[in-house]
Image (tube, rainbow, N blue to C red; front, side):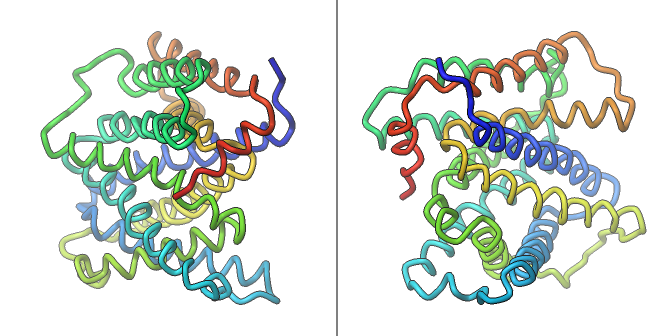
Length: 314
């Protein structure tokens, strides 16, 4: 069994950091829905527009000699970016937020993190092989850990209606698609330019159905604006770039499985920042997630297999 290289650990830290930001932003979004009456579609639209714009601005500032439109010189990239924007960016965010609105953050999180199952099965199908034993073990351990962290062993906090279940599963499929589909674009153009255009185009596509200037009865205060900016800058821009850029160092399967550590990262933030008291089941869940990270940090496969696993985008 081969110990993880430094690049693998870089990828692991990127996934964990991105997951922490995404997990915390989910709780913040639920507060925006419940306390300030924000609408899921409006939040998704403004989040995509501003996040995409910020990423493209960041790319231009760090790549002054290269145009942000260079990615479109190859016409096939236009189609790929649009598919990534609609099926990936809109799908994962809108479905996740509607699931939160219809149920709660805990239920939506549990359903969305069924995504790694689809990743494992898709990789196995494309590679014409059965999933490796360490993948199944890591998946099982991660799902148990994630369940215990989100529920603390208490099912009363899970609110599942038909609409919550449907939207949660849609977000799971979209989350898997987000990991698998943009690999080739990210390898060639980097995560900032790829995700930036994906988000901006997604915002444009959703505007006819949810206009950003239609504010409704949403309550804009200093606090709600601060929370919204946190969701945009940290919960979207930083989270997506870190998560998707980890594909340069990890296989899609490992990225998806490590992404299930989001609830652990959220719990750590809650303990040290919000002084949240955790229970015994949460400790057990944390141990399961840490075990998943350690399990995936040891790669028993050779480099050729790892390379093949990474090149599976549609």
